[in-house]
Image (cartoon, rainbow, N blue to C red; front, top):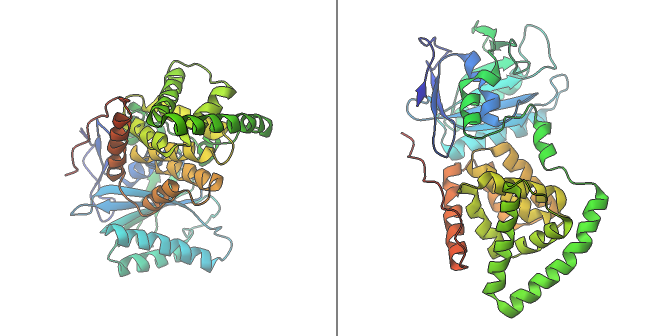
Length: 382
């Protein structure tokens, strides 16, 4: 589906941009003609409303009119000089643009700590323009706004660019509506994403740590004595927990400990990647999130990796990044967490990661467990 508004008014260099709202069917392509509408779409693209952020939209296609990767980075304090911090920020963006061979980017600065006629972070934007040009990426357009809320004033960066206006309601944007229709939640702030993985109070974690030791011993003994049958039983234990959450049932501490022990087996954990593309993806993700809050270290790492993968293939990069940090904090050097973190940092498209889900379905089948068939792959982008 292609949605468009009234006849386009050229935002600056490009008459319109298009974006696909999901990597899973039904994909929705939306055509945006005005800068205000583009800025209002940012919460829908990120999954939360950014503040004090540099939002970079990597453009794709020829001409560069389709939004691909969307990055969000923390902005330095505009009232403090931080050359090293700004240089690192510029390098991070330019390296990623080079790796993706991005022909152009559009930049949106969300900054409420500076007032006056001169847009904040002008030196940062100038350095970014130069660095991107060196790797063959054009800074196509740049806008600044203090907050991404209805009625906020936006303006262009170029001193010769006299565009400006007020934002429409981001919650009513076509991008937000499309994502909500596809089951995504758009959070009010980045802190709400952090809250999804916030650890349970220490007394609860300590109790589960006491329970998980015997559960791990029992799981290891069963695998040593019955081999694949024990692994299959562990996978079925995890799937039963997904069904419990799907039925809104509560998991007891003893059940959480058994699931944590089950996921400690790499085959069980790898098979669970297949749930990221099935019809029970939301129930599975609820389980992974609950385990991230409930499990002690290092068992928490496996649940966090499952959260990260599920979010990644759905295009929710910010929550995937938070989950990967949790995994690597829980178990530094975790191989799969490092691989996914490198893919996310390098801007690897989510659809590429779906191959891992196909492999996971094969692992489950070899164990004698039929996971729910995955949804079909979306058609290739034009």
